[in-house]
Length: 264
Image: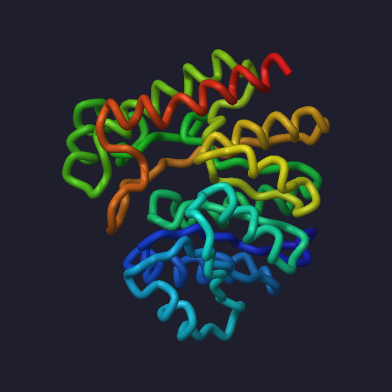
C-alpha cells in the first residue's frame, strides 16, 4: 500500500473486555502490519474495568506499535471515552471501534485501505451497506433469519438487542433522512481534525454517532460506507440493554437526537 496515511491511532473504549482485548489487539497489529502502515498506536480508554484490563495493557509489549491505556476516573461514558482517546491520540488519522470482537480486525484493514485511497473522506463500517450483515449471520445470502437468531442466542450477545438494533437503525434513518445505511455504526476512520468535543459531549451512549454524522454532513465531508458482517461477542457481557424495556429506554435518546438534528 502506497501510504497517504502518515499515522493512525486506534481507540478502543472498554469496560471489562479483558478476554476480548487479549485476542483483538494482536489481531489488529497483525492486520495493520499486513498493509505496511508503519506508524500506528492503540489507545485503550478504560471506564473502570475490574477484570484486570489496566494491568494487561500496562504489561503489553509490542515491537510494532505503542499500546497504552487511559484510565477514566469520571462517570462511565462511551462517547466521552471515545473523545478522550481522540484528544490524546498522536496521529493524523483516527479509527475507533468496539472492543468486544463484533468488529473484526480484517475489516479494520479494509477501512484503512479505503481511507488511504480517499484521505479526505470519512470511512464507516456499515452492517447494512452492500456486503454487510448483522450479528448471527455467518455467510451472506446463506444464513436465514431464524438461523441468525439461533447463532446470537448461543453467544454472549442479546437476541433482543440484535433484532431491536436492526429495525431501530432503519427507523432512525427514516427520521434523520440521509443516504447512509448505518447511522449508529460506531466503527469509523477519518482525520482527527474532523472530530470535536461537541460531537460527543451531548450524548449518553451511541446516539453521539448521529450528532457526529450530522456535523460531518453539514461540513460537506464525504462519507463512504464499507459493508461488513458484525460478529457476535467473543466474551464478556453486552453493554447494550438485554430486554425490551431497557432497549426502549436506551432508544429514546437516539430518537430525540435524530429529530433534533433533522429539524435544527
